[in-house]
Image 1 (cartoon, rainbow, N blue to C red):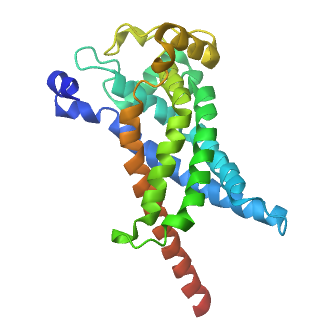
Image 2 (image 1 turned 180 degrees about the vertical axis):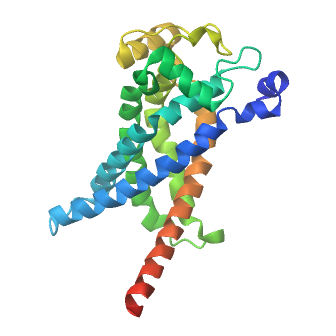
Image 3 (image 1 turned 45 degrees about the horizontal axis):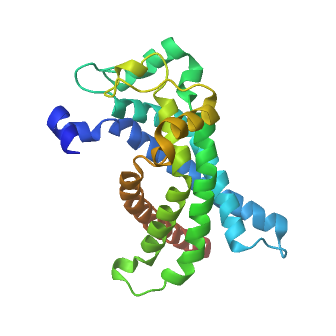
Length: 254
């Protein structure tokens, strides 16, 4: 953090924030819509022979994560590339130019570079996250905590556990995202060229950097993911109750 501030100024810590904000809004909308829809579908299909809560949450979370990742992946790629570029030799001066340049140099497929490992990472991550969360929520939710934050604590624990388990796949996704014709122009000029897709990238990192190399950035990722998940789930639960209450009052009125 000190290095970025010293060389790129305080705004350098917010590189890629515009596509990141667009990503989070669109991602959450698709994710939670798919999660709720899949939950209702599974309960309608199985009826009395319902799935165990953890299994149901895993399937619904994985489905929601996969759908959201596929729909919003170009924004994820843009966020990573903006975060990787420096001030002296900007690869992309702005979001519009970035979209035009990637399309011109890499085609439509360039926006989905690394989608395979992205989906491979998000399916177990979101599956484990919601399985942990729905298991912990009935226990921690009723606790007498400030701001009724039992759901936030459940979200934090679930996020830390799921992120730690699936982090190597997330690292592979990000390494693949900065491949392509602009690979040598980012802040780190020595980004290796990975071949053989996600498996080849995984094996190259393991061979050149060892097992620890697969967990580079885990600490800062957890520092970001834990509070983000806590706020997201706390807000989601309260928004859900609010809209359910509005709908009930509407039905009673009519």
